[in-house]
Image 1 (cartoon, rainbow, N blue to C red):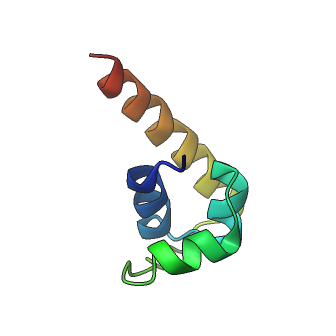
Image 2 (cartoon, rainbow, N blue to C red):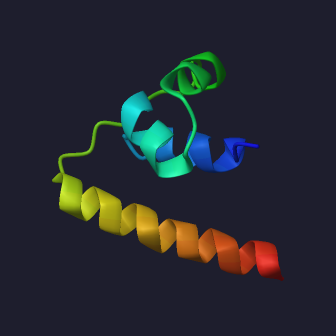
Length: 67
């Protein structure tokens, strides 16, 4: 099952459907169907920085879910 909260967060962070699908192990079509109403933020950062930020957010979310 795909973590929709994470998918929404990644979309808001500016990731494309293709990038989200790769990160979450789901299909692009799932992303398109489930994230159609989520606006993609346009950050002026390079992909390396974007992926580092996503990793930090994932870690924080995992810690919160473990509480």
